[in-house]
Image (tube, rainbow, N blue to C red; front, top):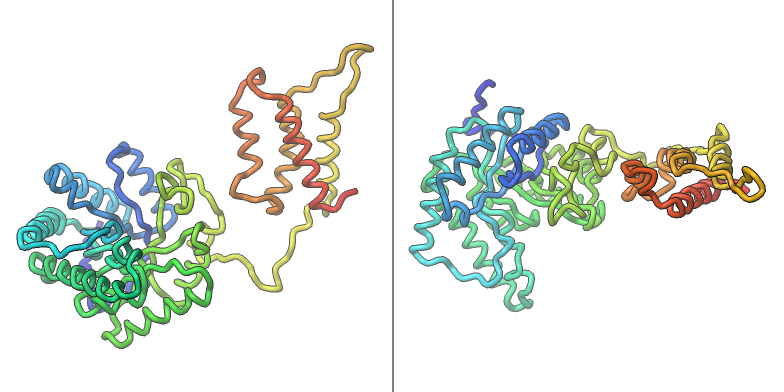
Amino acid sequence: MMQHNYIEEKKTTDLKHIRGVCHNPDFSKSWNQMEYELQCAQRLQLNSVRFWMEEKQWKENATEYLSNIKKFISLCWKYGITVMPILWNGNFITDYRQPDEAEWEEKKRYAKDVYDTLSAEEGILLWDIINEPMCNDYMGKANAKEAKQRFEELKEYARTLCTVFRTVAPDVPITVGHEQAWHCESTIDLVDVISFHEYHCTRKEIKASYEKAMELSKVNGNKPVLNTETGCIGRANPYDIELEMCHEYQVGWYLFNLICEGSWGDIHGLIYPDGTIRDPAVIAALFGFFRNRTSERILPAPNRERHANQAIERVKVVLKVEEESQFVNKKVTTEEILEAAEYCVNILEACELVPMYDLPSAKIACWRTMEEKERNPQEIKQFAYDMAKLLQEKCLIL
C-alpha cells in the first residue's frame, strides 16, 4: 500500500475525509476475530480508528504490550484504516495531585517508548495526548467554588502532557480529545488539530457545539477540526443526527463504538461481533442517507393488498381447536404456529409498527434453534395471538 505522509500534510489538510470509529484492540480475542471486525469497518467505508493505550499495561510488560499494539496498527493499515492512539485518559481521575518529578520522568519514558516503537508505522494519522482531561469525578463532584481551581489544575496537567510528548516527538501532529468544544481553548495553542466530543441532546445544542469548534478554528489559523467521539443512544444523542451534523458542517468524525459489546454495549455500537447490526438508520447515515423527518414523508400502508387480513386469518386457523374425532383434537405443530406468527411479524417489522430494539422475529429465530419437543407450545401460541392482535390494531381491522 502506498505510504501516506500525514506529518507533511498536518498543516494543510482539513481532515474532512475522516470517517472514523472508536475501537480498542482487545487482546483477549483471537487475531482472526480482530481482523474480521476491521474487515467490517472497511465494508462500512470507515477509514480511521481511535483507540486507548494504557500506561499501566506498558509498565507491566512494555515489550509484549507495544508489540501487540504495533501488530494492531499494522492490521488496521492492511484495510486502509489509519489510527489515532490515545496515550493517556482523564476519565478516571478521582483525587488529582500534580505528578512529582519522578512520575513525570516515567511518563516521558512511556511516551518515548511508545513513539520509538510505533512511529514508523504507516497508518498513524494523529496522536491524541489525553482523552477528556476535564471529564472525571474530580471535576464532576466539585462544588462551584472548587470547580474553577480544579479545571485549571487539569488544564495544566493536559498541557504538560503535551509538552512531555513534544520533547520525544517534536514534529508529529497531536491533539487533545476534549469532552466539550469550549474545553479546546485550554490546549489549542499546543495542538495541530482541534478535537472535541459531541454528546448533546438536542439539535440546537449540537449545532452550538459545532459552531464553537468552527469559531475556534477560525481564530486559530484555521486549524483542522475533528469530532473524535460521538453517538450514544442512551444520551439522547442519536448517531444518525450526529452524522447529519458532521455532513452539514463538513467535519471529520469518530463514532463511539464500532462493536456492540461489553460495558458500553447497551448504549453504544454500530455492529455486533458477528457483523450483524443494531440500527439500519445508523448504517444508512454512514453513507449520507438520513431519515425523512419532513412533512413529505410517506406513511406505510401495511394492509394495502390485504396481507394483514390474510396473516391474521392464518393465525386464527392454527390456533383454532379442531376435532379429529369425538374425543381427539387435531394437533398443530409449533412450527406451523411460528409460520403463521412470522407472517404477521414480517408486516409489523417492515412497516416499523413494533419497537425495533427487541425484534419479534428474533424471538421466532430463537424458538427455531430449539427442537420441537423443547419448545413451549403455550408460549408460542400466546406470541402468535399477540402478534395477530397487534397487527389487527395497527391496521384498524375489526
